[in-house]
Length: 446
Image (cartoon, rainbow, N blue to C red; front, side, top):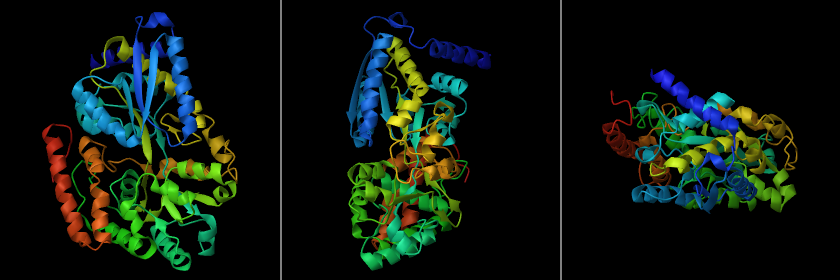
């Protein structure tokens, strides 16, 4: 019976998708939707999106407004609007909003409709929108962003690594040699901000550590995590400056553009900014996949583009919001193109041109195949809850910057790696237990 009901629900959404903009008769007169989104790191995307949203609204007889804010304001605004019971119709966030699950609509219908229309989504997108323990699609992920290494080709060539570092050992040895010869450091953040959270996790995963195991049990305090933290502290002490302790989300971009770092872990936005300023300097930037450690090569997606609809949205406003999201996915080739290949599609079939664009960048990179390394992104890009699921506890651990704070204490000499990891593990256990008591995190058998 449940399967039959689910089939009928998906079929109804698919029919709406096929019908597309059935015109103004689809929604009651005066229907309006509002979107809250970040100010995209690639401004061209916002220009395209705002025009697209206006055109969609006109075609569907729906009033559409789009507000853009700094990405750091998204979660605080979402929390305030859920608490108030009113606000934007659709909010786009950049990493899993699982910790808000109790205030969000279950979007199973449009997730399953999109899968039926476009095939399987990238695993990282599924993980950022679905909670297995409650069988709930608390969000809809439409895009994700690869997080390759960005390196100065000339500096690394002079150091003996013409293709940039391939392993964490390379990063330390080559980064240290460059720093000693030129004073130009590696730029891996160790502060409570987005890029630091991602970069520190990448090293821990690649050393075999993780916040949780595949069954959602906390396993942070391990020999593997301790080894990764010791490595990161050594990297900071020997190949970086104290600036990384004050790193912000803009630091990677600013340092790369200024030629002040030899290597960062970042999306292509830093490179794109440089490309517009100095084409020759941009040509000297190369990309690497995730660096390999003792346990393999892993890096999180840099961010995700994730839509949520708060529970206070209903009626035609809710129906129009869901249709907008599905139609946006239908047009994802344009979204990827106008984001200058920043937004990768959660449903690969929606951007058939992507491989060709990676081989020959439509935005003029030199050499044209500069982004070809990103063809392998699904071999090494994982999600925040890896190797388990991205649950509300994982999202809260991420938001509290527990991992970069742990690493910074060791790099600053304030604690031993063993003590810092043990302390962080204790706090992570508290968070997991709180969410487990609500039935929203699995595990608990260890």
